[in-house]
Length: 287
Image 1: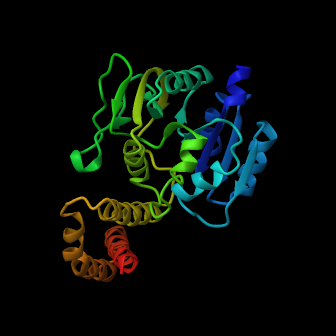
Image 2: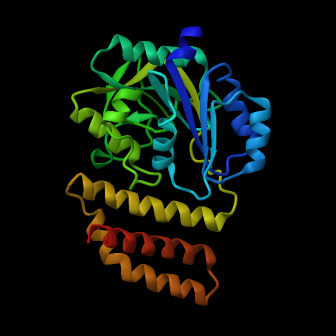
């Protein structure tokens, strides 16, 4: 795997992931260059990991700067031809990473490639499909070989550093959601394809949040998803009723938040406050 070590750097962004999860991910990557950005500024986690694994660069951010900005930050330290954007909850071995590189090198028009993913029981999971405006996600694509797709999840994406730099990386206005879709759109505009590799396998469990505090989890999810979704349709000038729908509901969200506070419905009030603030932030941005 000497050639692999010289060709690819794995970059991982953390936020409240537990040690065992990250450890399992890193075991598969032993011998490879790994850059970790921790948006939770967890010094004790860093100490444990650097004592057990050889990590190229480990950066603690004093505040949560988000998925997109943190991966852009990590990419600046990459000195290999390729970078593999990877979530800590996505387990991929070196053989499958080599397959990703072979896929991109054997297809001259390929700009980005992602593995086929499975859950811990071996069931196929969603990893690629159409852009958001073309339909709902979540249904896995049944394939028997490599296929070109509109978009792939940001949980595991291989791209050349040169192309990532030419694209200026992820759009940092996206905090967590839709940044992978928007990046794939810009790759398409450059006349490159996005491929899901059949022979590259990874284990990725969906729907398990790493944030332990349920109130915090609700707020982060609703705030960032609402804002990122609105920004996606606004930036790409795609006709969709999401923006107008949210605008009409803005005052209603505020009222429901206040009602929730009065009746001590903390979860519901957090849900509506997060959405109200996200819409407010969006309209401040576009003015």
